[in-house]
Length: 249
Image 1 (tube, rainbow, N blue to C red):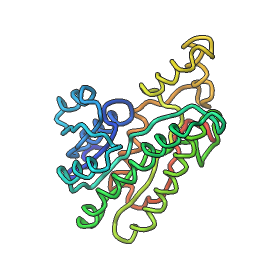
Image 2: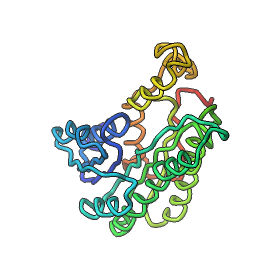
Image 3: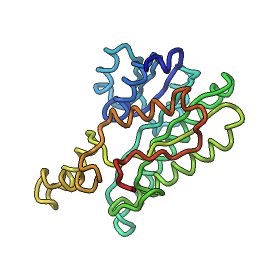
């Protein structure tokens, strides 16, 4: 199937690498006009060469988010992909960890939603997709205290937005991935290498917790995001869609 997003304008964050980059490319392949943002201009350059509109954006800057969306909108689709994975428990989580995690993983999504919604409502509809996680309200995961807490908040926010605007044509869903083979995971593997006995062992530990015996690819997650963004999912809203290779089965 192709052209599922023809005529649609799609906005997304954290498009420089990983799931965000894969989704930007997938949106474009489905015929959408894509505005891809990231705080790293160099990482965006490859997308610009693919005919995708790019803009450097720090989603922690509320005003910049509003300006960017006003400049390029209105949008039919928004994908909130930006986030960070802290490794901590309730005893080791610092005030700084807590504040940063909620600012990036939750508040930034709220600001994007608040900025894109008026345009969607004026157009008579739209689709918002948020990045949640299988770690959080779906499954408790060791050493993911503040991360899981923020991702549970994303699920709650998603359901609230869906309930408030379902009668006005705007859908809101979130995706809950298991472990995905991305540059972000590579950073966590490096951070765990010393304790695990090397990077090979650290990577094996992540793979070992997946029931399928492998990690997800960014493209597999992007395919779900495209589905939730496209008209074919018109009857889906307020859902936390798990894509975790059987991790929570």
